[in-house]
Every structure is written in structure tokens, then in C-alpha cells.
Image (cartoon, rainbow, N blue to C red; front, side, top):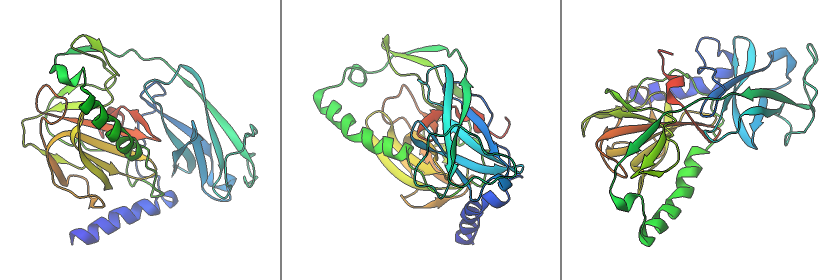
Length: 296
């Protein structure tokens, strides 16, 4: 029965572009670390589903309330001001730098157009943490390990499958208080590091971690900074990552359903105590998971 349900859940994603008016999109918040929702036209404007690209990376597109929309992830280090998405017909080989938008009642065929939006400012708080010196000042051995692991992690975040997500409303993957929010400017042993690129949820070691939405496990590993980690592909570049796990209870290639147990909370990697670090990537950009929670 479980296998049958998984097939149905993932199959719905494959055809979501035909009937995607029932679910909610993420919160539109075009700031660094946020999400921009851009309207691309009605189905009658397109001969085939449109494709969008942002900073040369494929963007998630979905038919929602009789409008094609691009769901664009904005990285934390993105500059403020004008940003541009290139949109084209799916049958084209590559984006074309044409700025004329599609005309109503005239289907887009060979042309492409640019859709602009403004990236506004957002102030993130600062956080000061004390960790073991080895996690700040890396030895040559640990530095080599990190350099080996980084391409694997980056490839997982930038994965793009053609399956359309069957939902954008995610459930919280673990029960517990939020101990550190997305976007915090972090200082380890008073040394500045990259802003916090996920949501931390405090929970005792061994607390179950569940999948927040339907998807497929695309990578697992045990990394220097992240500890034991799982990556789940929810379709079209929507990727979730779960770090510092005590145990991993799924395998690469395994389909999962929302609420299905995938791991347990731990304190592996660079941590100050047991908790779950939860990240979400869109078109390779790490964005605020709170924008995808059902209560929003």
C-alpha cells in the first residue's frame, strides 16, 4: 500500500501543471534569502509550458490559478535593486535576450522575454557562538575534507528534476522550539562567518525527523560541518536539507511522503548541542524555510 501511495503522490507532481490551482505558493518576499513569485502569462499565451532562468539557473515554473508563474529563489548575498528572469518557450534550446513580453492572444513560440523585479532590503540579526577551535581554524586535513565535500553538497542543492512539486506547503520536520532563525549573521568564536542559511529547531538526540513534503532522497552523507545529512528533491529545483542528524533512516533514491520518518535529531558536525538544521534551496539559492510553512 505504501508503494502505491508514493507512486500516486509523485505522479501528481508530474501532472501538476494541468491542475495546480488548489495549493498555495510560498510567501512572496523578494529580499535576499527570500522568494519572488512572478506572473508569466495565461496558458493561452504559450504553445508549451514556459521555462525561466535566473542567474543562468533553471527556475521552478507552475500553472497556478490559470497563470503560469515563476517561483524564484534569491540568495542571501544577492545585491539589492533590479533583478531579471529570462523566460522562453520550453521548445527553445536556450534563452534569447529579447525584452518584448508575450502579447495577449498571441502564443509565444520562438521569442523569449525578460521579467524584472526589485530585490528589497531586509535586516537580519547577529548571533555569537562558541565552538571548538578545530571547527573555526581548520587543520590541513580537515580543510582538504571540506574542499572534497563542498562540490557534493553544491550539486545536491543545484539538482533540477522535471517533476513539478505536488505542494509548496511544508510541515515542520521536527517538533521543538526554533533555536536559530534563517539569515542570522553568525560569529563563531567572535570570527565572522557566512549568514545562517537555514532554520534550527532544538530537540533532544533521537527525536524523529520527518519529510516535510513528498519527494525523493537524492543524497546522504556525513560531512565535516553538517554532520550526518539528507537531501530531498521535491521537484524542479526545490530541495530540502537536514543536518547534524544522529541517524539516517532512508537511502538515496528512496521516495518519501510528508510526515514519513527519515532520520533522528543529533549533534554531528559543527554544533553546540543537539538540534535539526533545516535548509531549503530554490534554483540553487538557499531561502527561508518559514516561507514554506503551512501556517504562512
